[in-house]
Amino acid sequence: MRPLFHAALPRVLLKERGSGASRVSVYNMKKIGFIGWRGMVGSVLMNRMVEEHDFVGFESHFFSTSQAGQKAPEFAGTDCGVLLDAGNLDLLKEMDIIVTCQGGGYTTSVYDKLLASGWKGYWIDSASTLRQDPRACIILDPVNREVIDRDLERGIHTFVGGNCTTSIMLMALAGLIKSGAVEWLQMSSYQAASGAGAKNMRELLAQMGVLYGACAEDLKDPSASILKIEKEVRDAMNSPAMPVAEFTVPLAGSLIPWIDKKMESGQSREEWKGQAETNKILGFPEGQIKVDGNCVRISSLRCHSESFLIKLAKDITVPEIEEIIRNTNEWVKVIPNEKEETIRELSPAKVSGSLSVPIGRIRKTTIGDRYLSAFCVGDQLLWGAAEPLRRMLKILLGTL
Image 1 (tube, rainbow, N blue to C red):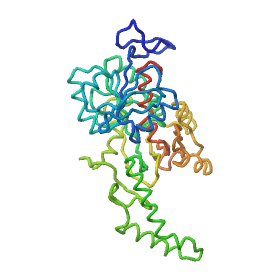
Image 2: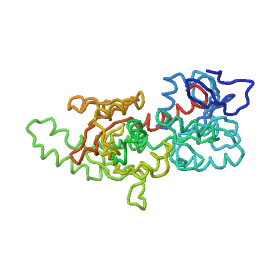
Image 3: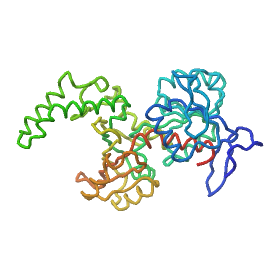
Image 4: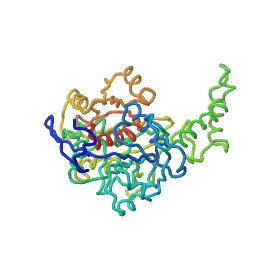
């Protein structure tokens, strides 16, 4: 591997040749700006970078939208001075790469102005704002490294993390889709509170506390009627005491069968993203793979789960399907369709905080041999948010 900052090279894209593959790296890059590093996704990103010893070989600069001038963090054990103003275009223009987890509002307010000012750096973003922008590449390198490399070669400078459920789905199923075995797929996602934000996670826990408090005394009494306990919980769930400022309705002990805005198609925007992003991530023409389904918020704290009905383009056996999936990437894990292994390995309780993407319940349906059922789980704060950004930064720095 070449050194990160080759003094004799201009800051241009250079092609490395090795192992039969072409890879593009950016050299002579020294200043990396981090924005939104204190939020939920940003915090996960910082933790992962510390765990992987990524804070080396470049200057870290930390920005803030509200606390400029205060002391900057020391994730790498290096004094990074003070927090810089995230709204100051002159300061942003000094960065070679900007990594933002600040959200779509910030991207909307800064991105175009920064480009208009003549900035030629690289923008890595967790927000959805630019995903369908023709100037942007949606990043999930274990799935679409060839797309990322191609876009780097043709001068793309904007790299955006994908929708959380779509990214997790592709970590599990991209190999099967790329093999030509999938005609269409229907996905039902069961999304954790963390997908809505930190305040929503707190509200879910507060709701759980209200429900427990409503029946705590009767729970201590083995002879108490379960129907009485259920009514206490139900009454509390629908009472003014139930905190619903974030979700607007109870989630604890219930679910919310709608996420994001309504589209003209009748889908929620979260459901629409499945098809729109799947094809762009894989570098396919728009609409080549049909994806639809229902997105539901459940009272899991962290980790999304997804159920699939897949129309196969050809009749292949379950062992063949499992082998294709198993070879998709190093993080996907095929779980045998057996009860004990499934309930032990295929749940948010097992997967939260892990890069593992288990997929199981793989079987041909009774509808027909070309209809496949499956179920997967993935930590949406990792592969669905922070990890693709971390890895894209390493790609630009030539270390991945």
